[in-house]
Amino acid sequence: MPMLGELLIESQLIASTQLEEALLQQSASGKRLGELLVELGAIDDFDLARVLATRLNLPLADLRQSTPDDDAIALVPESMARATVAIPVRRTDEGLQIAMAFPQDEAAVQQMRQSAGIAVVPMIAPPSDIRRAIDKSYRALAGVSRHVDAFLAAEAITARTVTESDSGIDAPVVQVVNLIITQGVRDRASDIHIEPQDARVRVRYRIDGALHDVLALPANMGASVISRIKVLAGMDIVERRKPQDGQIAMEVDGRPLDIRVSTTATIWGEKSVMRLLDKNRSLFRLGD
Image (tube, rainbow, N blue to C red):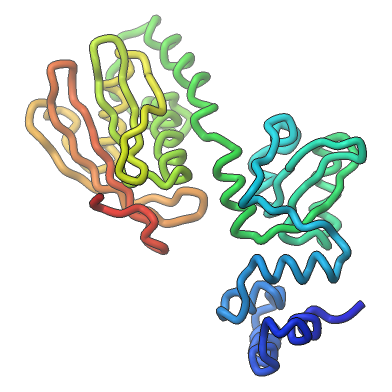
């Protein structure tokens, strides 16, 4: 089987000098050759995946044109998909088709096979395409309902105020706020609007300049959600009449994120706007 570097040079996708530089860095870093070539800007990751597909005699999964099936996604947990940089695409008579960044990783293939409980048919796709597909296919907001149910159960027992237990990592409100922010980042939202109304709390994302309704929470959850956001942003949770501004620094899916927070009083309670800024890639603009 031809070496990857030779194939890339034969395909006129990289120069021999670029290969030499990547090989030097590989000996020091231990990274995969293809990964280094992409980092150095020598090759696009889609072209690399195309050459690898030829070298390994595997089909190329075009995740830019097709969307993974929901029943396939359900067979592999999100944590495994992210750890292995692989995503189920669809079930066929041959087994579960899985788009993988590193299909030669036998341990990852075995993990997928054990999780799905059926045969696995590896395919290859660029890592960036796989990560985008994971972000779109595994919806963080799908987990909100059970945390809302837990909140309402506690609400039925005792009047709710922001206490130390409410701020614990497993507290329902904490999880709801985390999921709202996580999905906003995955959807590439520039702003997250949380606004109490008469019978609900409306959550909207601003994506490409337009506001989209994404979630409705029970009205009696609004004060606790806003209070949690104010705690994270270092704001005064007691002051609810005057506008306030704050800032949150956190990581979402391994990406460092700055969040500018503002709160304003309304007739139904405080509303909040969170403006997202990805420190690494500036995907989430501070202004639209």
